[in-house]
Image (cartoon, rainbow, N blue to C red; front, side, top):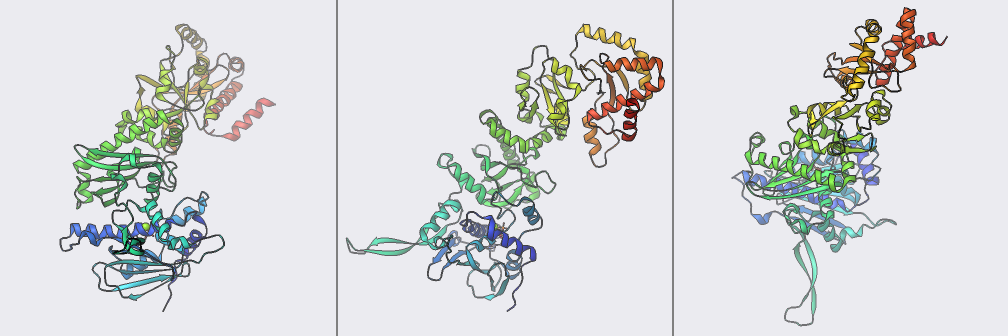
Length: 626
Ligand code: ADP
Ligand code: MG
């Protein structure tokens, strides 16, 4: 008989997995039981929607049998089974494209549980078995097949005898080694506790033959040991259980069992609603960003169950984009089983559930923010960007819902603060919520434009994400306070007196500024005396809707139009450089031109913009040095 080779990729992955990833080998059983349960779900679902199939409730089960003599562990299910092709396709290749690349990048140093993330759950069997045999007969098929493999070497497939539809998996459990004990996977007691721990909520009975001592019939003191079939799991899905019965560990186990993520959940949300629409849901906020989260491949969605039967793996309609990081499931009795994907979109019940869930997630996040600030900050580091996108997208339709969840870095607190915190400590004379945009907090800290606002003692929010300014533009105000960039034309800070002083300054130097504007024509809209600069000689500000940071973001986008912020070059009239500039204006036009170019380029550099001709710029500096 010919032995087929695993695909080269599979072989490598298999070896890596078997040798390194797992700290807990016992999870192999969870994987096999979960596959068995999926397979029964499929046949059960078919029977519910196909009148030609009728099944009795008792005919769905999973059975676990251990045999110490032959060192075998058998997992039998009455599920839908696999055809020859399915055995080959589903068990013959592992690791769908992409997963392997991911493994190399991340090295899986945390020992995170990735099995199942990528549809490699079945292979966990090789962590405890020298060889695995899968016998299966598919629904609607008259023949059965046997798949056999000793691990990385490859596998064989041949016809086999099997009466009933379903699958039987036989593991030849490894011999104990110096550091590993495999016997426990043949022990009744430990098998039972593994099932309890990971698979308790599986909806179908997981049966085991359990030995117990019983009084012999007709005797009062003579005991005998008998084998009895027992159902080990409670079969009550965790989402139907009472919150008070459940521990944090139960939720974490469920999260892992379901492969919602390979981290720990940061928070779980257990919802039971019995009102206009009835449903149970368990939702999780992950601790870490999924590796593909901000990529187009990421698919949001919750598992959708109709009265306990899984009808969709990722129901996207249940989650708005701004909460796309949420994982979990929803079970509702009010949804029809044979509802199609298209119909589901218009389903009124589903819409109600989705709305309800969104509200709940928001309020849970708010309470996390209030009660467990550190955890919230951790969450925000991972997913804050998504919330800001949420404020911006759909023309701001969700801004009211999301604005209280936002955080920005504060110049005063040197950490993230909420808008509410900012507004509640604004001094009485402060009219606006001030922000400054830049690449990083360190860079913003040094921006000359922040000088005046900071000197006034006002707090400044630092916008370091490209979405920040767009999001805030969409908000427009928070608690009736308008947002204002420290680079905007009018800061709304100066007193009447200062205004007058400025005006006279402006008049006095009108010609000079006009001349500068002439030299910089096409580059800046205006040159003027700065009101905001204290120690720096120049800066750029903007008039109109677009700020410089927004220009940068828009220009970096694919097929960007040629958008330009309307820039104003501001000169500090109290800076000694201004005196030199004035002198040059009076006496040496060439020098004046040179100074103007230099100052403009300096302002560009400060903003993190590129200078059109850096060679000329450095040559110009040299000119004034000699
Ligand atoms: P996943 O469950 O994430 O798809 P697995 O590696 O656990 O990945 O299983 C691979 C595939 O093999 C399953 O999707 C399923 O199609 C098939 N399979 C595994 N076990 C069974 C089973 N007991 N009955 C029917 N099909 C199975
Ligand atoms: Mg699986």
